Image (cartoon, rainbow, N blue to C red; front, side, top):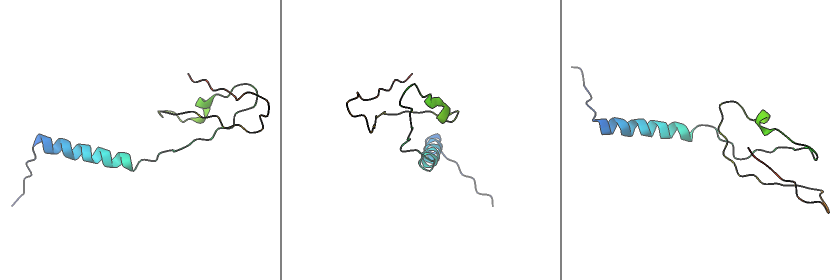
Amino acid sequence: MEKVFNLSSATRIALILLLCFNSLIHLPQTKALWLTIPSHGTKCVSQDIQTHVVVLADYYVVADNIKGQPLPTISAK
């Protein structure tokens, strides 16, 4: 005898959401990205980021050997 599974639409949606959530947990994530920026001039960070990648970030400047000089600045577009 063949078994037939009749799932309600709410159950189907719940299963789909569970599968999506489970797959998101197992995707690789980056916690930090270290960039070495030249002391003079600019650095285009988009060259270091792969295509089809969304980047949400908080930027912090960590600078050494800047005695008597102002901290470097970051501008994002």
